Length: 166
Picture 1 (spheres, helix red, strand yellow):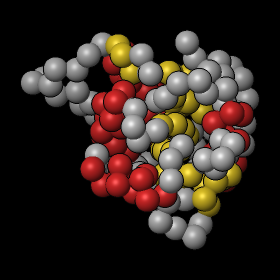
Picture 2 (cartoon, helix red, strand yellow):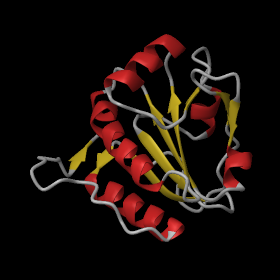
Picture 3 (cartoon, helix red, strand yellow):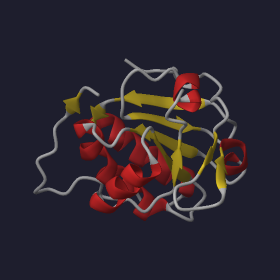
Picture 4 (cartoon, helix red, strand yellow):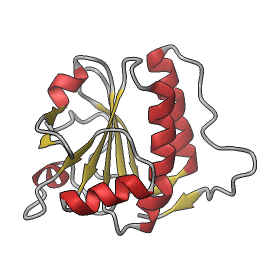
């Protein structure tokens, strides 16, 4: 069950970045191209499954006209530990843990929730939980948006589930 559906204009995201004095602005990022917004909680086992694959997307397409932003629903210290444990190097923004304004504006009920946002600001793909097919779809979309060859997201020896609810 998606939060905000495809075709909807993405709400603005303006949040502080982990380990930075800067903030992330969706409007600013969209000037560079499409954005993958990936919401998570550190205690979520499905987020722990998904985020290393989001990291693979980042490694394959960073600097090629698409952006990935993780959006944590946890404290900065807990988020930093999560990023280190799971090898996350893409930028992570911090939603306010008192009232989760950005998560709320995206209609989140479960995590992980991933939104592929076009350069025009529309949500083109909304994914809640883990879907191997939707991750492959994101991979295709990122390759098409960058003009880069599609990365091998799943290795042949990996036992990757098709679906896990968030």
